[in-house]
Length: 370
Image (tube, rainbow, N blue to C red; front, side, top):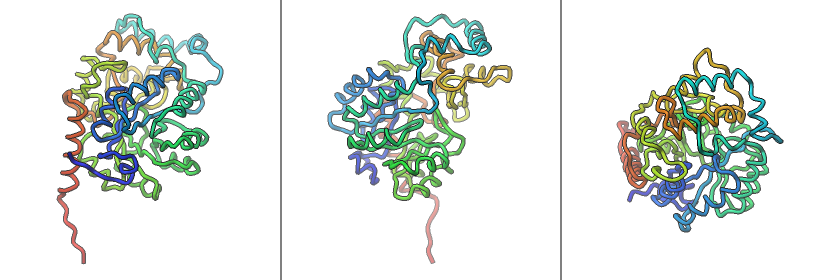
């Protein structure tokens, strides 16, 4: 097996500097068991569900390292309920969502999911944080937002703590926070993302960060890109979209249905779009009638997080449950182009490692000094 060492990888005891983000217990565990570091996203897990999810992953990992991604966005309502928020949503947006439901003949949802039963509030995030503080998690990354207090509390429990950033301004905002690593995420990334490209973002943040380890993210799905990231000074890469094609994603809470999987396999690098229609924050997804509907000039403006989520949660749940083909979508980065067929996580990791090794050994340039 190819092993690629960086200081951060050695500190974590992993063979490959590949950090894999997933909402799937099985995928997360498989990434770590294949030599990288699986990072489980708890955004969709209520606080009381987090300990059980972490225990399930730990059972599959043994004593190998485990990472967690948590969100702590600012501006969430303090003392609100989902029912009260729904009752006070603006009529124009409510009518627009009802129109989409009728246009695409979406049956009502019959399931309770994160999207139609949870309102993001500070107490929700604090409950998740408490679960992480009580866990044996080795690494925690803040995907959106953070507080210095949360960082110091996690570090006091011996956990490495980092944050995803989408611009140099974000890095400047975190200068006073004693982070252990940074993930520099370019606009090519799936889900919540910024506007600066990965090739520009990564070396800029590496220079700003000094000795602080930087991971590269955004559109990366081939080993040649990993080699490029390492050449730019990154100590590893952060991949999310890559794992949507994994066979381990075929069951469990975050199973991917055949129709959505086919869309992902068919998508090219130009088949994604950024929309605020799902969460209220810019999110890159596979292009669909959903992204087109919210980009329509006649559409009302999406609401801010978490109010957009409250607005569309029932419809999103119904779309997934009934596999309403035109509206089916998933967060995905431009690196979706590299995912054309179902493969296991070990197969994906082996390919990435081999491609990276080739990229590091071969090049079209030669260096002459004098």
